[in-house]
Length: 569
Ligand SMILES: O=C(O)CCC(=O)C(=O)O
Ligand SMILES: [Fe+2]
Image (cartoon, rainbow, N blue to C red; front, side, top):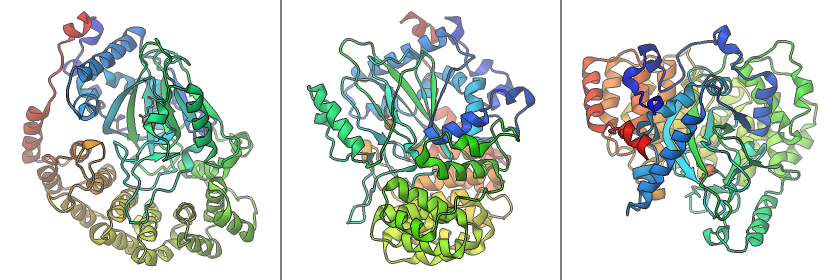
């Protein structure tokens, strides 16, 4: 199995540099263009939320190796008594255990699709996992926007995130395919509890129990699953079982509703490797293979009708296109849909109102922001987010609202890169991030600041200093241990924000030194992972920083399993 004995030492330096993320190139070379998505594919992705890719550079031997590697990982789990095998063995160390896995991300079609969707300079998130099918079903859910089903921020409708699923074997109806519901990435369920805390998991039916999902009566399970989909109250939803050939990659909008379905008795295990990717740049032009003559209006009519206004808006944002005049629906009708429609109607109305960018439409959305129902407040927030820089100051007073559920949304609505030029917005979001008593306000403020920091035309050194300072021990203590992992949703959001900053602004050598000193000892592995990525993005590495990093590398590196052992098993 000489194929898999390659390790990072053999990789030429220019390739090694691109191992963690896409290469830092600003626009695709002509030879890469053919690997980017076409207009039709990108529009379809924004509508359906899913795209299937057959990597062209990987062969059966690679896929078989990845299949055996997954088997080995699960064999370790089965032989372990650890209650935290998901953290100790399976999660987050896949790239260290199986370094060849990066060849997947370097495949021209995979990287072309990632780049089309997330823009240049996208970055991999430190969380990853390999899932094994079982005879239990999963409920349809959206993955937590922080690992292990925690919550840091409202869901991003724009392609700021992507889920990459890789299947090292054929996926058939028998071995437990992933199932998705097309177009559901723009909708969600309420999560706020009356005591100020929140549900961390976004299953579509919170009453669905583990026992029910493993019930011997398969007909019962199927009926419960149908009921749970119906409970969304959205007509004409299309469920799709993702049966794909061995070696396929499925790129999904991060927030698409999906689930692992049961495997049939006696079927071989089905593995699915999962990785998260993040955008770091505000788009300035289309990152996909855009043809100027493409008739987007005509094509969009073929897409799922409920999501068309959202897709049109995101399309315009992604390509930095002049916004097309939206359909003329009266304010009265839009108000009616926003305040009393179902989730699809609310979100659609919010987008139509936001696209108007007028005082009247923004006032209506602000009224929605204080509505008694969470779903109306949330939809209004998405409308406000796209209402334009001129309306942003109207949102500011709501950051100081008495009701925590309004403050959480108000800070999120301000997370636009155009607001980087509005010193008042920056100041208010930073104050919320530091002073608000509510963890979800602070984490949403940190996330929103991340989007603001994508603005390249302002000096954010004071903000960057303040963010780094928030990572000092004891400032933002751990606030969750969902999945038996003590960590901080707020520190993770701050680290995300700093990564956005690092990809758009130069940090000083002192800022990197301080960041490393504060975070390499952080017991939240994602804060650590982000800190390394932030440092990697930076040119100003002092010898002190290099020393700290190399000391960490010598301490933390996972010793690879000898390749001969892999080929022997
Ligand atoms: O195994 C699968 O197909 C999906 C697993 C999944 O979505 C999850 O565990 O979050
Ligand atoms: Fe999931």
